Image 1 (cartoon, helix red, strand yellow):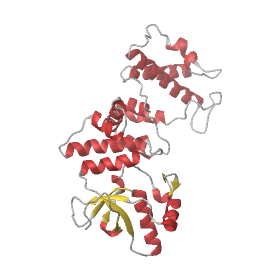
Image 2 (cartoon, helix red, strand yellow):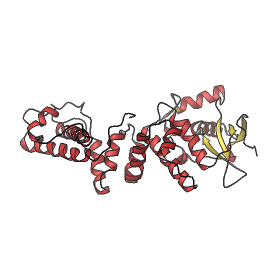
Image 3 (tube, helix red, strand yellow):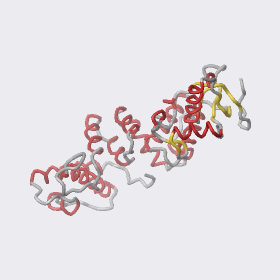
Image 4 (cartoon, helix red, strand yellow):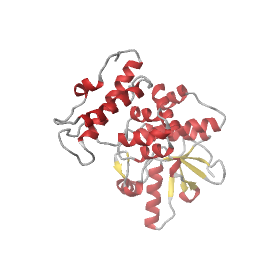
Amino acid sequence: MYKPNPNTIVEIPLSLIDVNDSWNCRSGKWEVNDGDEEGQQFDDLVLSIREKGQEVPCDVRIHPDNPERYQLIAGFRRARAKKKIAAEDKVDGILRCIVIAADNIQARLRNISENTGRQNISIPDIAWGIHELHIAAQVNGRPMSIGQIARMVAKSESYVSHLLTIMTKCKPAITKRWRSMPKSIGVRAMHSIALLAKSDQDAAFELLLMPGSSADPTKESTKYSSWSDNAKRKAYSVGVMLGQLEGSGCITTTGLDFVKHIRLMVTLRDGCTVKQRDMIVDEMVRGYELGKQRDPILRDE
């Protein structure tokens, strides 16, 4: 067994390395080219390693439960690529690695640090990684404050706080869908769902999946939903912002007539019925009530 040495690159048989993809901070179905590695699709990464070899080593540690094996910490796509090449060539795969000394917290942090430094990592993956680090610290008897985690991952404390709130208060089924979506829903929107009762979260999440306000509101319908659905989503968003501003003391909405002023804040189609208008107003009021309970607007998103 190779002992930890951060200055030495060693070659380890893949058969001796435990690779648990679900442990990785970064999600993605790499075998079907979902995601990339340094701007390359997975198949391109395989081709590059075939032609040039594995230029960047992976990080492993001696497995905490089996001193005769290793555990992969960082470099999951590279390991998957080497495994694919070995299977295609019908040879025993070898992975170039650096063996590091790391406990559970340090290993989680190393994985998060490598991935959060990439421009194309998704917000849900960052949230998942931070949450895993938070849990690992508690389980190992070394709980970390939000400030400590924020400094380690180079994010603001408010950003980390909101991500942890999302991961701890949202229903697991919702955070799982959030992480697996091709295009991420933002932190503000997910945080607003986290503040809702769990019985209301599914409906609120479905509302966020509606098309954005860029859809043409003059059309009866779009590929995904009607113009009124888009208007309701926009009204909800505006309501949340108004509630936030009032909650922080920046404005007062005393005497604001949502029905009277709805057209100033949301584009309504000509011929909009009273029933349609009232439904849109209801969404704005719902967002407004929620916004008053929220923290100030994030600037890291």
